[in-house]
Image 1 (cartoon, rainbow over the protein chains, first blue to last red):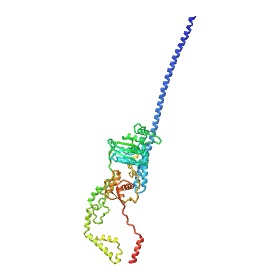
Image 2: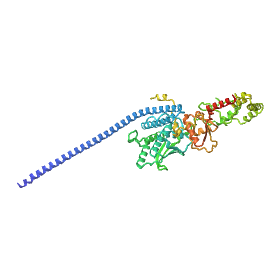
Image 3: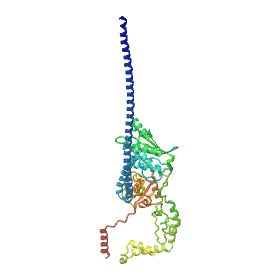
Image 4: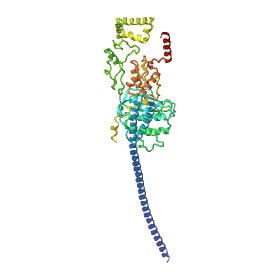
Length: 400
Length: 125
């Protein structure tokens, strides 16, 4: 019996071992299945997550685009209105140029320009309309145009000029970008300081340097400004903060689109920010001709040699069709003889007229004078009562 | 939207008049009237380079002799008041001389004339 005893034990053990193996195998299989399931779930989850992020991004882009479109067309309307109003104000300024209303009209004009610039800036951020194309303008005029678009334009001083023009395509964007720079410069410096503009010629083109005497920018602001001025900026009006800071974003977009460079990373000699706008040669041309009429000096010489009474009317006109007035140089010396009337601006003509008078004419004048004094000294009062001294002098001329 | 260009045939001036005047106020009427005569100071060498093109242009216009304010305004394309402001500033800077228009002879006092007439009548009449 004893040799039977291990058998059941061995059998039980065997069964147990088999059962254990089977269990382990099953467990392992189950675990593998679970792991596979988890992997599957995980990949599904990440897939879902990606899709979600994607759809959120698409929705955001769509919303941005919608905002941009709405803002773009709204700004287009506002810009149109601002431009129209500017024309009306210009017309009024010409019409009421003589009166004191002009002062108020200039104020309105200033406010309107700022209004137009705001609309323009938002339009630029929304890839919108920049405004009507301008004619070629001198760098100096473009700088002054920018100056006129900010609130504190009186604090801006232009210290130098150059003989260069800006191509018509770049006039408006450069003016707008510079206006944003000037706006920053004047808003972040104290009201009694001056913002200086220097225009310099450099080998790469022209630099417009804006120096303010403000407190400058800290590192964070500088980093933000540089990011907005570089190409890695976010497009659109989102992320400009509240209140929105358009300046650098607008400048960044314009600089990239029209090919000029703006940097704000240096310090001005007055402790504030030095902003430099670099215009490359392909945005520059020669200076445009002045539209105002040229000095009138040479025409005086030509008409004076003609002589004759007042022939100059219609002979010379200015560029805008106004007749040029011949100038009589010595205003005080007006020739009094109506018959002769030589060219008044011709110096040799005057002695000629005088010598002609020295003949019978002057004798007659002297005679009249003498008669006048005689009649004055005469005792018969009745004959002289009617003639005043003025009458006597005119009498003398009539006789001659 | 395409109708904009037809509606606005002209573009507004690039440089606005208030920038040209640098925000200065209008001068007094008795300082510069329409018929005030203006001429440039004879010495051209003291002319600085920091004048704006408009101011240079005004100086050139005035350099040939006396011109009235109205005439100067006619030659420029600027509103009259703007020209006046610039002329006043140039005069203050010593680049221009203004000459007030010739005063009309003041009317004599009527009472005095009557008294003289009465006196003359009493003596000779």
